[in-house]
Length: 500
Image (cartoon, rainbow, N blue to C red; front, side):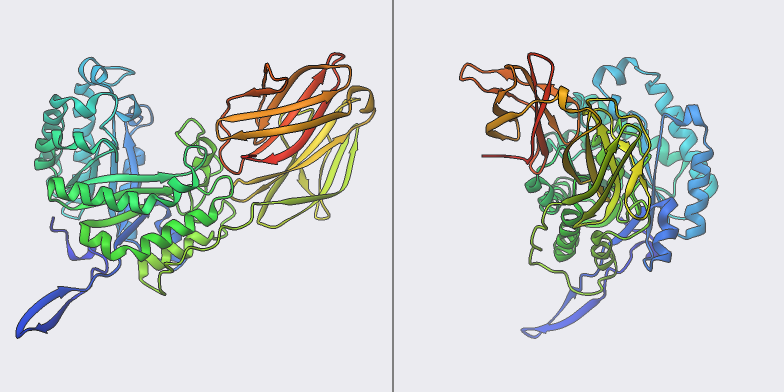
């Protein structure tokens, strides 16, 4: 693919070497072309990093909200002098064979082509002969479509239609990076396209540390496979590394690894990579794949302070400094110390010190909803009702979503509703929690709480303990609660999971 020189970033020069009397031209590999969301390109520039691409998403929701968003995105891209990278995401997660054939959720083939035509016409009217990249149907190869030969023809025809109305744009087919044995089914679409693209996302609760830290090798393997199958340029058009649950160190490690392997990526055929977000978005919808993790995808925290990953990304993009191939030691888990605790009927307070970047302090009454306390300067406090007999627990949350929990503190008149329990036999892995407990007037039920979530029941086992399978990934905070036959409560310590 031949893009204008301004789109190529720092790809280096040709170095002449005389070997065995022959003149050999060897490319010197430099930094990959990089990008951010188009609305955050300006923030990146102010922080000292110019970018090549400005990415944004367009989908069927334009029918509800109108095309003003597209107009604004394109205008911003022109003003910032970056290449728009449009994620054309019409079918989205609803895509299935039947949905494409017969329609679903207001989606249809006719509407796909009609909206695609409008998209292409607007792009051409605004951008003219300036470079634009349209990623066609990000992660389309799922829901049975990955093995449906007819969709190859539909994609090829759709790309042809887009190209007719926006002839100066480049079109990349957006594969989901799985099921590579099926990719060759889409040879007609790839023959019509200018290149292929894929995403790389990692974060809690879905990815283990091993999976997270393997993101670079996963991406390199994907680039090689796409290049081998289709022989066209490859774009990593959406890389998103969540720092939720204390993973700022992992984000930095992966981006350093990308930097260290930059030459391998370019040699394999990678043209560029786009990081999803400059800054965390605390209001990002929770109905997406990573849930709360989606709110921590940025290279800066929500308050604007830089995460360690920002410097790693900046070094990757500018080739400043040297990549560090030696893995950084895994930092200690986020911990907090709670002091000056006061629990009254209408007042709760605590002073908190941590080993990390403290974002907020919360309190929960009897294991209920977490209430954010006000930062008073001398500590965190708030006025709300603590009923007689209740207990209050505090939680400190770091800027990247990690949490540390206090013990349970009795409120006014708490003694009559609690009992002294003996806990032992705590054991479990990522999908198993078990405990033994005695005390009170006899145990009526035992529950488990994972990372401050809802209390979930454990089953009484034949050997006398309580256990059940729930997902608690490595590093989770797990606590048990017992209720005796008179309704009194007792809580265990908080355990860092897993416990062997």
